Amino acid sequence: MPELPEVETTRRGIAPHIQGRLITELIVRNSQLRWPVPFDLAQRVQGQRVKEVTRRAKYLFLHLDSGSIIIHLGMSGSLSLVQDTEPAGKHDHLELHFEQDIRLRYTDPRRFGCWLWTEDTRQHPLLAHLGPEPLEAEFNAEYLYQKARKRRQAVKPFIMDNSVVVGVGNIYATEALFLSGIDPRRPAHSLSERECQDLVGHIRQVLAQAIEQGGTTLRDFIGGDGRPGYFQQQLQVYGRSGQTCPRCHGLLTQVRLGQRTSVYCPECQH
Ligand SMILES: [Zn+2]
Image 1 (cartoon, rainbow, N blue to C red):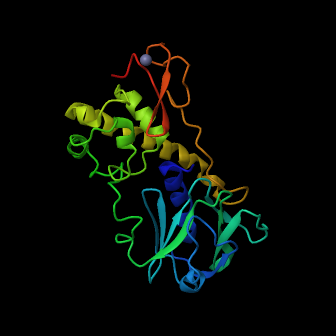
Image 2: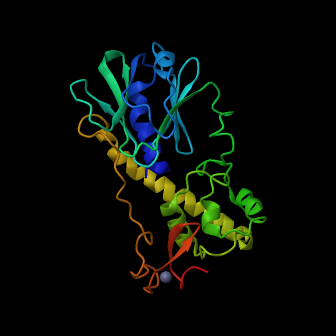
């Protein structure tokens, strides 16, 4: 599933090629995504210019003069810039054409993504209740501590809750808790201010590293399959249950929390 770093990498990859450009046409080959593509989307966007490409949580926005296209990549979606000679495959559901033969193609085998339209990105029901961005100043130790104080939920699903902070997927939550030495099963309200500070720092660190690594895939945006793949990140504990802990050489173990598998080290995480 594309996580926040992949979505941010996608934004950085496409923005320089489409910002300021005029949309000549939107082709919708299959409108049956997670929510149907609005029937009038093609008509709305034609002839408008992309002013800016931004991201909020895992949503991308193409801001036009009269509103914004909201794109979510779902479980398997990707955006790529293609040449006009590349034929569309069966999972290439939408294609945005720009002046000067630039084409932005949306590919999504499982069709859990979306393309929607809004005139106000802050008021949209999908976006109105999102917590702060993990890499912005609003997400800090004091904020997390105040949120955590009232919650009995285990700390791992707590930090993966989009109303607390957006974009902390299973990989990043698992890694950040390991780096902070915090047991993922602990109730959120048991976190000290110091631990909140550690956790905020490590969440930022793992996400920033992933975004940095994603930058190396940017050259692939034009030509080839054009997608930012899953990053070859150096993960310490995620996906390594039964292997040795990189810190103490004890065995990593796994537990299910909030329907997700969590790997942790019983020696290093308390
Ligand atoms: Zn350990």
